[in-house]
Image (cartoon, rainbow, N blue to C red; front, side):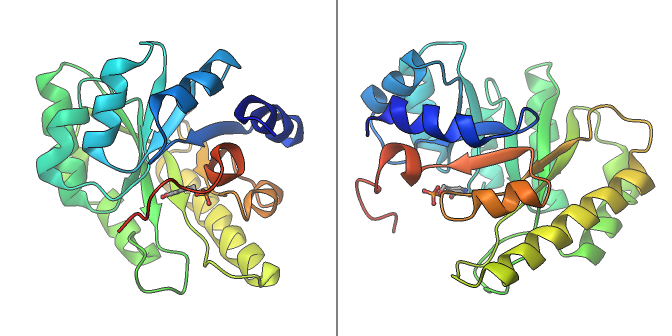
Length: 225
Ligand SMILES: *Cc1c(COP(=O)(O)O)cnc(C)c1O
């Protein structure tokens, strides 16, 4: 199937409250344009330089989402245009984003990445660190970032019960955090979870943003590392 047929198929499976982030990392601009011409507007990338090069070349109404691990010294390159950062994994990074957002006189929407998988390589806050960060005086000072929800990646496994459990935990944490810190907020509403292999489970567990790459664009063009 073509890229636009893959997108159409996936969209037909998504409930109305779930948005699709088309993960275009390693893929050329022509693939992104094919998706764009089929109506897709949200694209996810995991590397700053790659995303910025594509942003400069592609239509300006694309919403660029950073989904990969972000280094503080690279925030400045995406601060002018990024529409959502999914992968905020420390207060230190959030402070760097806030500083760069201020320079551009904008408020950058962010998700806090939560470590839900058993794999040790994954980045993210644990539940305790998350509560510490959100209740800290440093966090209260940050006026140019807005936390609109949480993000997480499940363990890469065929064990669907385990995946349900991890996403279910993230949904519960989302509800607890909303109640404790954002009870009146209309904007704290996003739960970014689900990739090509597990997005159906993620949707059953309450995802509002699925990040799908290979099921749209095919296998990645070159090894990531
Ligand atoms: C690459 C990536 C995805 C998409 O993975 P697929 O399995 O190709 O759908 C989603 N989220 C993150 C954080 C990624 O790095």
